[in-house]
Image 1 (tube, helix red, strand yellow):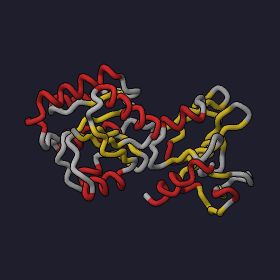
Image 2: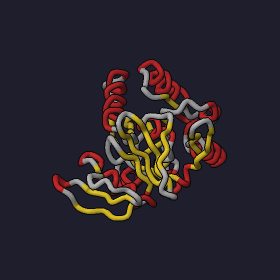
Image 3: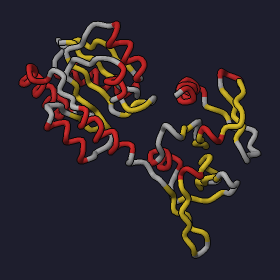
Image 4: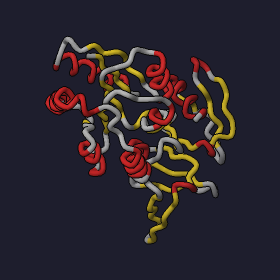
Length: 252
C-alpha cells in the first residue's frame, strides 16, 4: 500500500510517517507534500497513492482547494488541529479524521477502517461536506478584539487592524487610524485567532497584514526588511526561516 502525506509542518509530517511505519513497516510513503501547489503537482505527475493523509489547513490555504484543481481518486483521511463538531460529518461519509497531535491508536483505528471498507471509499467526498467544513473553518477566526480603555470597553474590528506587535511583555494592535491598543492576548494567541490569509507572523515581535506593508527591501542573510505604515521601527525584518513562506503568502 502506498500513502501520500499532505502536511505543511515538517515535524508533523515526519511524525506521521514514523507512526505509519510502526503500524505497518510494509507501507510505502509515496511522499510528503507541504502545500496545495505541490500536492496538485504530485497527484498529476506522481504515482497514484492508495490512500492520502491530508492536513485540512495548509500554509497556502484549505486543502479542499486540491479537489478543485485536480482529480483526487484515492480515499482521504484528514488531519486537523481543530476539534470542531462539524468535522464528524466526515465519518458519516466513510472518511475519517485525526486530531493533532496524532495519536498512534487513533491512526491505527483509521488505517484499520480504511482496510475494512476500502472498496466503498472511492470518491467519497461530497461537495456539501466540503462546503460545510470550509465555512465552519473560515468562520472560526476572530472578527474583533475587545479593548479596555480606562473603565470603558471598545470593540476593534480585525479589518481595522494593520499589525500586531509585542513590546515590553505586552501585546498591542495598531489600527488604520494610527492608534495603538493593548490586547489581552500574547502574540502567539493572537496568531492562532487570526485568519492566516489576512495576517502573517514575520518574526517573534510582529504579525502583519498585507495592507500594513508600505515597502519591502532585500536584507542581509537572505532576509527581508519591511516598512510598515505608521511605524518608526527601522528593524522590522522577516526572519530567515520564514522568508520563503512569507513570499508564498504575498503571492496568494
